Image (tube, rainbow, N blue to C red; front, side, top):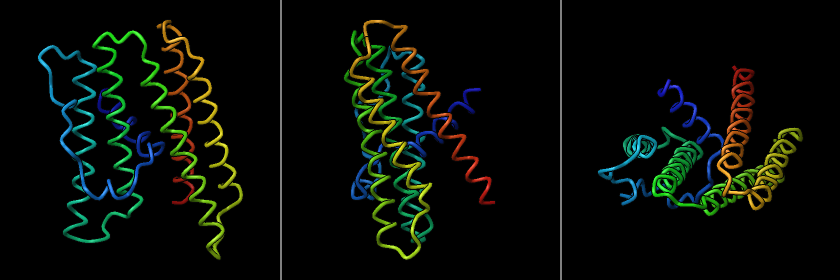
Length: 197
């Protein structure tokens, strides 16, 4: 069960991502003091730390492979792995905030939703630029899909601003809604990949 959850989180992270600069991506993972185990870490924090370590390892493996055999992993694949690391780090930050008894997780939630909105907008703008530059224009339906994803993520930011983080039920519902959206996007991505084969 935990293995399939980890794979699902990794897939969601790779698809949804947090969109970070390519220069940082090429450097590889840096040692993060928040990923050092503490003596009283809860199970969720230990799990999040392991997830960060796994995503960093996958990213580093891709970078090392590209050093030995350039071009094995595309720039976009490296970027997706880097976004997975950032996503895993956000999950760790959220788990640490919960375990340290942070009363209001709003800052973490806002950072997470704003990063997703920026990444979605960047994906849409990149597709528009490619469509304008290339003789092989992007499918109008795909451009509209990316525009709508960017719009939905912006609405999630607005929704997060009004979230009552003093209510555990409201925060849990927000997390469930977020997961539901991620699973829907993931299932759509899997369906598109299945069609290509």
